Image (cartoon, rainbow, N blue to C red):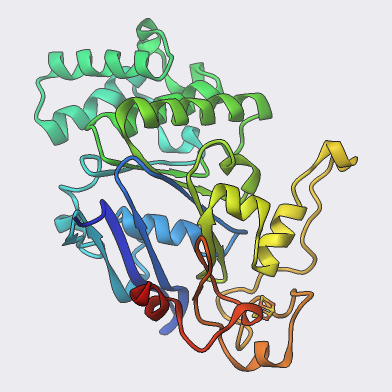
Length: 329
Ligand code: SF4
């Protein structure tokens, strides 16, 4: 049976002054119904480009350079705005970061939640407003607050409204694009708890985009670590945390504050991620990697299947790439 979503060797380029810059390359993963996966990486790693590609929301200067995305076994027209329209909201929806920018400041929140029900599901205004009240309750907002305008709500309440809108047409997949950015720590935890609860209540599949590895521990089943446009490691949450393989994953985990070891501050990874214009040859992480070897400059590491997942690093390189090893298992 086909997985709910399959991202197959997807590549996306950004065109800038006639030059094609690789934003993501060879991105491959599957998502089962009801599963929660996280795409984790620093800014510029390609995680948001991957998510926006899946939702068919690429910017006008972006183009698919290779691969495809399949939804329930059928190719999604991710680079055709009109053809993608029936899938947005109904099959795949997005909870964007920064709800204040994503919500319309001059419309009451109930009307904003009701709108996709009328446009996509063909509901009458009365039925759509009833559905919007239901959705407000589902995300923990008293329905009588529906008359409020976005600026009258706290940041956490606005993010709950964004979640209600994302759920309006009962999608199978919700993408959370840094859904807790700009919220205080307590509100972040409440929003993540809400997403986890809704995921199990509605059997949703969740793709969580985040730069913060610590938020995925409680909320996701699997993690994919992205660096410079590629997935460099993939595994279950428990394996990634207990036995990370890729040097970048290890540094990401070490950067998380750990009060039990007297570390209360984030410990940043030394150096900066490469930009789209100047990616190092070979392994893109080699300029920051404490384990870099001469081969890391010469060759891009291929994916190797380990016990629980995959890693792309010359430290684990065998003669057979992951896809061939996987086919033989
Ligand atoms: Fe480090 Fe080399 Fe592995 Fe890249 S391939 S992460 S540079 S050891």
